[in-house]
Amino acid sequence: MRPTSWILGSTAGAVALVILAAGCGGVRPSERTVTRPTPHPTVMTTSVQTLPSALPTPTADAVEPLPTSQVQSVLQRLLEDNAGCRLPCWWGIVPGFTSWPAAEVFMGRLGLDAYFVGSPAGSSFVASFAYEVVLGEEVSNQELRLIVEENTIIGIDVVLGHTPYFELVDLLSEYGVPSEVWLRTIGQEREGVAPLSLLLYYPEEGILAHYTDADSHLVGGAIRSCLPGGGFHGIGLVPPEERLSFRQAVYRVAGRWFNAEFQALEDVSALDAQGFHDLFRDGNAASCLETPARFWAP
Image (cartoon, rainbow, N blue to C red; front, side):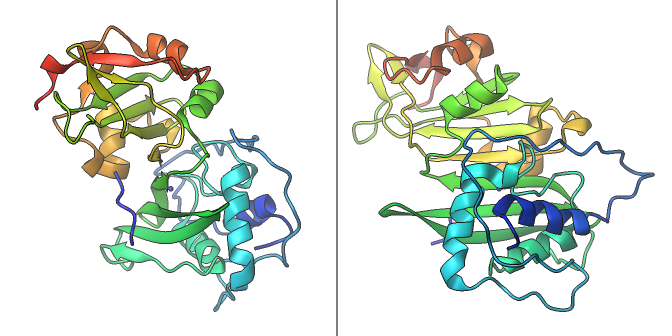
């Protein structure tokens, strides 16, 4: 089943960076000036193990996919260390910098085929890659959407589903106080719960994060969410140098996440972005936010 969105060589990290660096053309210097992010360890970091030989450049006529037996271990390691680069880089793909041919070759090496919205022969399109990652005894259905304009990746939308990577406590610990926090819920329980969704935006980092709590409840006239780990979540990534507004960033990577039901956190709760960060940064299971039910449609 395709997930519903709202994101090799000598090493897992080196593979992503080498192959994408080799094909990062497609950015016209006269149109866009980009400073490439310096690779840093990501929130979840593990040692990188040796993989098969280096990938061909994007100009190669054909790309031989990795053996199926190796793809799962590569995907798992990419989730663990993000190819050694810091958001908004994803698996070595940098929004505003990486070319579509380079990204296409890299995904092809993983044996992943794209589903296109719009023609890849045109100037603007979206390439979606759906895949499964085995995590212990569970199988996580995930999706990576690459938004392409003028042959350059200008946005990335990653559906992580229920995984232990880039969870809320990790994001707050690594990137600090978000510039904006938006939420959506309902004013009464349905089948015993009142699901809640959150959007966190870091414009200087180009990060738009989406988290859900399917186990929030109506308590004393307010919807209470303690945002436990393991909830469904995703990451949207845009070029930070463009300094997009919140609505522009949402529209860029995942317009269907956002509608009039989302409201700014400070308008519907006693918290602002700083208070939200302070409440949840330590991952305390007893930390909960409340939003009065009167602000939300039943």
